[in-house]
Amino acid sequence: MTLRVEDMTCGHCAGTIKNAIETGLPGTQVEADPASKLVSVRGSSDLASIKALVAKAGYTPVAA
Image 1 (cartoon, rainbow, N blue to C red):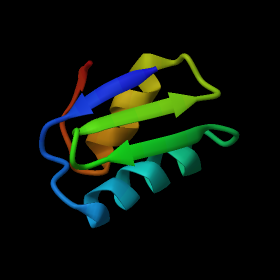
Image 2 (cartoon, helix red, strand yellow):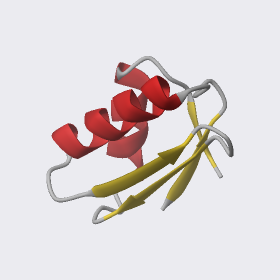
Image 3 (tube, rainbow, N blue to C red):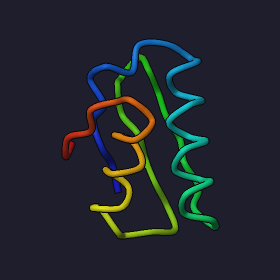
């Protein structure tokens, strides 16, 4: 599953988003790329939970 996060602007942002998803949904694998503004999640298809975790971390997720 891939999300676009327009307000992810740096490596710190990417790390925060990655940590939020992996902590909130154990067993997921997350790749966050601030250059493309894309977050890829493997191991979960629960879009609502993923979006909620990204939002709780302070970012605005949208479907890619």
